[in-house]
Image (cartoon, rainbow, N blue to C red):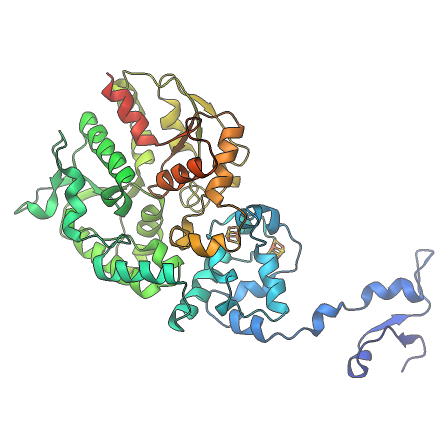
Length: 438
Ligand code: SF4
Ligand code: SF4
């Protein structure tokens, strides 16, 4: 061995040769001989068993987990960690090094795929691809939390996560003073401008039904030529895909694409960000490419017509919660704000975490059906954390535009003792109220 070098530290004999420090090193007059060079000594980290990491990164889509270099930028950005879940890609990476079997661990189910970590990660560790890939492997192995499995079964059997019959999908249209074209009921459906993809929560959940009826009234007052798929519509499948059931997603998507093909329409307008994400970004790979808009985008493009119909006022302090799958995932931050700002009387207040930095409600990535799993790890629900922020900035109304969120946040308002202090409303309900009082 070159006498200039000596072996450092107490590394295993077989590894020593590679790790040495120079005895006499002077660089630009600075003596960095001997122990100063210990910075070159590899950390113990290289000695860990890579079995668990290798199992994960071998999956298509999960490769980037291995790229993490532990800078920790993602941890404060992670809403789950923020809610006491001791989480984030850095922590998942580290636990994998320490031998965690992710496929049989609650870490697999906590991520909501909110994308806030990817936004700050210098190595592009992509939890939005890692988690669905790892979950799909766990699902195939039968290692699924019971609450999620139940949802998968209901969707497979009934086409919606509530387990309601397809027949009841149009029940929300009954008793409405609005003409709604239910396209499958028409013998030979004539062309329609807008095919409104209503979605499960708008069709079946009571607070969603409120919003669906508000939307129908608003569309009608604006003279929008619209129709719905009625009993032939099925769940968009986005949450099922993200939660580890890509096969179920494909079945649902294929079904919806077949229904879309039956009608002549100009664009699809969706009620929710997950339907928007699925139809815009995932359906094309399965043969369905459409002009699709979230309802706030559709209305923002007709703001003059909307404004002309807004006769009443809404004199409240309103804050807006950016849905992860409309904002970070699809870059739309302005349309909901433009629509809200057009309502006379509204005083807009931003929360600290908004737009690109928006906080997650906890419902994405299958989180809607994983509250029990999350409760075992988190100090609070993400929705509770968010509601506290809305109250803290002085908002009286938390405005949302995702069908998952009204019920999630209303529950959180109750559990954080903020009843009477904060009201949760879909943006479309606010518009409807102001048009109603015209
Ligand atoms: S930000 Fe990226 S590289 Fe840094 S610790 Fe997190 S996952 Fe790893
Ligand atoms: S996607 Fe969101 S929830 Fe998942 S690890 Fe990243 S920041 Fe946390």
